[in-house]
Structure formats: structure tokens, C-alpha cells
Amino acid sequence: MMNIDTACVHGFKDKFNQVGSINVPIFQTVPYKHKQIGDLTEYGYTRLHNPTREAAETLVATLENAVGSLAFTSGMAAATTLFQLFDSKDHIISTEDLYGGTITLLNKYTVEKNGVEIDFVNTGNISDIKAKIKPNTKAVFIETPTNPMMHVTDIAAVKAIMPKGALLIVDNTFLTPYFLQPLGLGADIVLHSGTKYLAGHNDTLCGFLVFKDTDLLDTIKLIRTTFGAPLAPMDSFLLIRGVKTLALRMERAQQNAMELAQWMTTHPKIKNVYYTGLPNHPGYDIMKKQASGFGAMISFEVDTAETAHKVLLGAKIITFAESLGGTETLLTYPMENTHGEVPEEERLARGINDRLLRLSVGIENIADLKSDLEQALTGIAI
Ligand SMILES: *Cc1c(COP(=O)(O)O)cnc(C)c1O
Figure 1: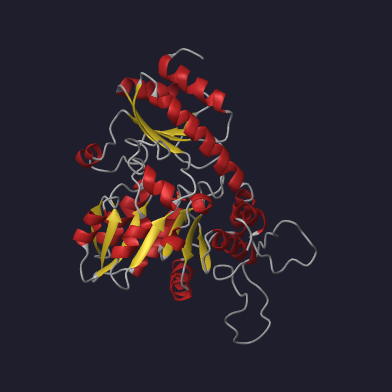
Figure 2: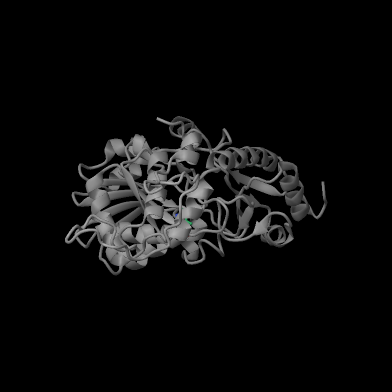
């Protein structure tokens, strides 16, 4: 078996390549000529099968040590398809501190429209999950670390209390398989917004579901085919191209994040730093145990809302923009951008106030990032 940094470069399988092309060809076709009559497994139509997409799926499955994966047009398309597994007889337990889009999906469609019952808890507290388990609990859905508060969940500890037959689903967007492999800790399905670290360059929207079990993959593949959200050939190519440098980008972004987080803890205008790589972070020990790195996402609370606004508009290299996981360092205002739809009372109770900022640390030079943040915070260049 390849090491993961080698797999990032070589882990796609391009079974049609006969000319020795180093990169995967983009099969920009919808129909394929039928070779026989009545063979439903052959290539027929790109919504079902596409070699470039399959190469991307093989790559992500290889990185996650999975039996297979399915690629979608976005992380939300992957999540939407996944939650079609559940109906009004079912109960789900979910992390409360979720990505904003997932909150809307679960509340408005999974619960209100499809009638699924969901309890939202801090999955960092295993006893909170345990207290909500019912005979019809069909899944536990976890983000770790969470967005934006960086709560950490012990995946193996959740696995240990899972009811029989229920699915443990982990959104691994923040850490990627380079730092965390949830299937090895007991997860059944891994969700990715491939838009973020996997594609990695803030230029491609895509999503993945990764499986431990082929039956489940087949069930979800039929939903994807029917709902119609498979990843396009060109975007599949861009994903494969992006993943080639995943190991390098994750290492550099993490190194920058660690240095920046440590510096931030000493800054007079910064009151709280939420980074899982700081030893005083409540999730630090679990991260040490289950992941091989801390990632590059930092949330921090400044002294006043005015300072927060100054930083958002005053940063020059760091860009006020709503995404994460790319080469560029991006800064967001969770209260407005990612969590604008969460009711105010709930938002504040979770710490998402008008002083909280979230930083996706990129791969620039750390000295430039520090001096940019300093001038944005204080108006004084260092
Ligand atoms: C961005 C994101 C999603 C949604 O992915 P898209 O590719 O934007 O549809 C889901 N989960 C997490 C943790 C995310 O950061």
C-alpha cells in the first residue's frame, strides 16, 4: 500500500489510458456507444458512469481507505443525497455546531419535509449522545472539529455507544484524510465538501461520500443517479489535480496556523483563540489520539465588534471571503456569512457573536500573514 502523500499523486486509477498520459483524460461526453444489448453495467450515459469521475472517486476512496466513494456536484449535493436515506420513521442525532448549509438542509428538508426526527447535541459530550439514543435511532452525524467553534468529537467513543445497525457519519471536510481517517475509527460514511481542502484552490465546487460498505454505496449511487447530482468530468479532473498537492498544502497550512494561533494568544486585541492545536483547547487530547494533525482552521474572538469589522475590511493579503481550505488565507464573519440563518439566541449561546471571526489559513508566508493581521487589528504595520 502507498503512503498517503504518494497516494495523493498516484491514487487515481485511469483504466482507459492507453497512451501513457500522466494526467487523467477529461472524458467530456454524455452518451457512450453501446457494445452489447442489455448490459446495464457498461458505460451508457454520464449521469451514471464517467471515467474521469470514477478516477476521482477511486482517488478519494484510496485516501480514506474505503471500498469506494461517490462524487457530487457539491458538498451540499452529497449531503442532500445522503439524507434521502432517512424517512419519517427514523431518528438521527447530530452535532449542533454544524456547517450553515447542513443546518438548513436538516431543519427545512430532512425534518420539516421528510419528517425525520433529529436531536442536535454537542457530540463532544458522549453522554449527551447516549441520552438521546432511541429504538429508531438510525444515524449519528458528526462534524469534527466543528464549524466555527472547533468542538472535537471522539469518533471511536461514539462508535462504542452506537445502537446496532445505526450509521455513524462523519463530515471530514476540515481535516481531510491526510489528517483524519474516520472509517478506521468506526465511521460508516464520510462526507466531504471537496470544494475545500481536497480541490484546494478555491476554484472547484464538489462533494464526496465515502463508504466502508458496498451495499450502502450502491443504494446511494441509485439516489444520486435519480436525483442527478454527479460531479462533471472537468471538475473531476480539477479535483484530481488539486489532490496531487494535498499533503504539501495541509502541512504548510497547518504550520502557518499553529504559528499564527500561538501569536494570536498573546495579542491584546484578541480575547479567545479556538484552535485545536493549542494544548489548552478542550479537544487537544482527542485530536492527538485520533488525528495525525490539527488542520488549519482557527476561530478567534476580538475585543469589540468594531475591531472585528476593522479586521474584515482592513486585511489586505488575507481576504474577507466565505470559504475555506484553499491556498489563499480567507477570513469570514460566521455571524453574518456562514451562520446568518441560525436564530440569534441559539447563535449567541453557541459563542457565535459579533466579535467572532474565522480564519482558514492558507499557504502564504507566515510573516506576511502576521503583519497583515497586525495592521488590520491595530492599524500599525509590523
Ligand atoms: C463547505 C462545507 C459544506 C458544503 O459544501 P459545498 O461544497 O459548499 O456544497 C459542508 N460541510 C462543511 C464542513 C463545509 O465546510
